[in-house]
Image 1 (tube, rainbow, N blue to C red):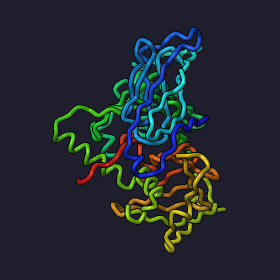
Image 2: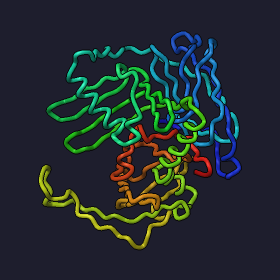
Image 3: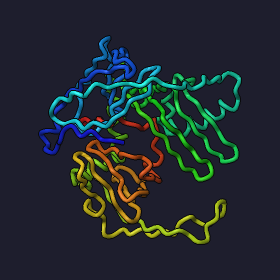
Image 4: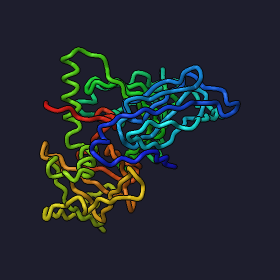
Length: 353
């Protein structure tokens, strides 16, 4: 995926600025404007629609790297990476290509297999936590699911935005699911997509409760951790990181009683940021690199997360978001996070309780 690095940000003063992104969306076939297209920064709270002339403006963009997305019925979804700083951004004309094939409609009435697949999907996508109990998909007919009984894999995607109401955190989420893959044999789960967050309307007391829950969800999260790594403030932010050495257990057999790994946790010395953090030659993009696993705890709870890096480097951005989710595996605390605990990438916790 190509990155369009439009601006450079470094100083704390810059981080207070908010900018605009403007541009125009056209039909690649005839260069005519495309109206009413959804234009947004993925996994953030910034979004809009194109006007009759195809023009759009995104406002209040916080500094950071984002996936910029354009989606409209009948056209291929357009994506590119942008890096926002202090100056406004004017994008070149965006030309959309027509879709050559359409997904078949899914009939769910009376389809017991689909209902069973949906329940499996919901528990892995939304989650099973207290937050998940207040979170629901309101248009599940936009979802396509397939379960292979031989491989015990559940796969899925959406042919339109899934509309999600998260009454625990006070967000309405539009989620365009690109891929969902759950292997029930290994327990491995992967899903990816583009989403737009919107604050739900509510009373003053509801909004206060949502703000408190959002901050509680943020504290100790992977976003919080990676931001503290960038600021070199892990200790002050309440994180401790240890080295976990793993070696394959030669006696392990799937379905057996032996553990998959032989593990050794080195509680001292605690790891410091330079032990696993790397600068890159790409502005606004940073990297994690570590031979063993990172064992991460936060003082706010007793949950521990094991972070295993699958590649030589796991890249992340200024907002504390992993660039390629497949580059890392979370076990434990963060491994239980689902859509119900998902915060927008431009989230900033408010002061106080």
